[in-house]
Amino acid sequence: MPDFVGSQKDYRKANEKILQFDKYNDEQFSIKVGIVYQDLNQSNEIEILSNNYMSIEIENFLNLIGELVQLKNFNKFRGDLDIKTDQHGIYSYFSTYQNHQIMFNVAPMIPSDKNDLEFIQRKSLVSNALIYIVFQEENNLSYQGEFFVGK
Image 1 (cartoon, rainbow, N blue to C red):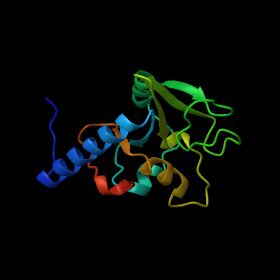
Image 2 (image 1 turned 45 degrees about the vertical axis):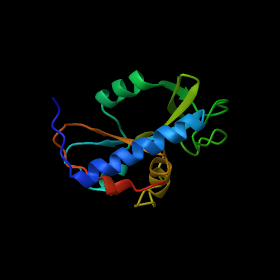
Image 3 (image 1 turned 90 degrees about the horizontal axis):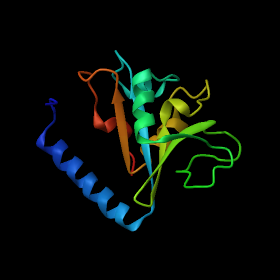
Image 4 (image 1 turned 135 degrees about the vertical axis):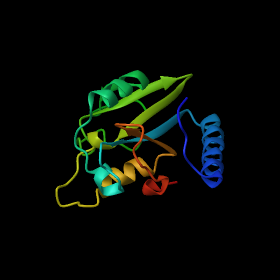
């Protein structure tokens, strides 16, 4: 059994988000999901958003939940990702589940400007998703949900 750590407040907040997602998902046929990759010894938002690479484990995970798609001229739900100029990368992951289109905004796949030390573009594309997934390289890493406060 996984060891879940968190306060009652954290669980209530998570339950509220899940209910909000369910309500929204029932009304929509498309959803974007933000995904960030937390490597070893990364403990803050900037370190996590600075990742320009992904481990084989997260790539395997992404291949389980979606299909690698080319963004340019993509003709399905784009999840706010640019599909004309490669501004948000060349590829992302996409899935369809029960007629719902899901675009995964994967932070390490979104290019970052070397002068953007706060990774504003990555952060906005991930945190403005209704839900996001933090893929941790090891299960004992510390993570604070307040890092990526979005909608």
